[in-house]
Length: 122
Image (cartoon, rainbow, N blue to C red; front, side, top):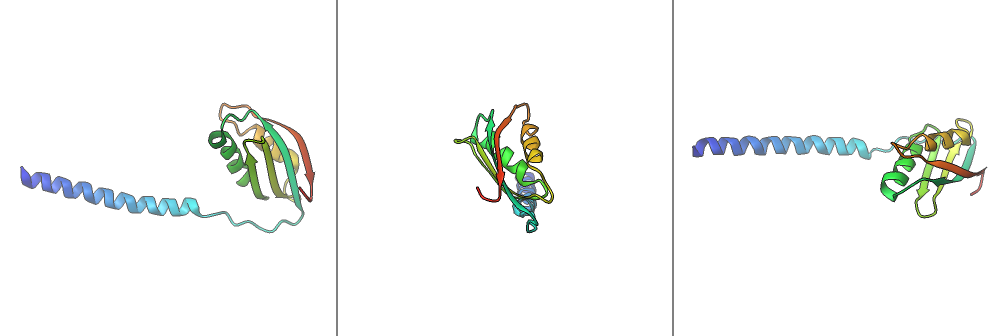
């Protein structure tokens, strides 16, 4: 009985040890940032986003979705101000593409973009 408990304990410890190493590899991959090419035609868009209910579930999700779009250099969403600011390459994207990405990013949540401003300076 003691022998089988020892074997079981060793097996569980080995599984946990191996799974932790796998998680470390996965976390490393998640932490890698996408390579951002220099914008040919740098542009800044800012707009108001209505419909956000929380900083983590809404604002961070929108910010992440915008950041993943090819041509976006940087995206920041301020939950308190209901404001998004995106640096992007006008050669690859238009501001309407960014608006569409936000308004379709809700997972059951509806976001409405307004007061869109674009230019080379914020």
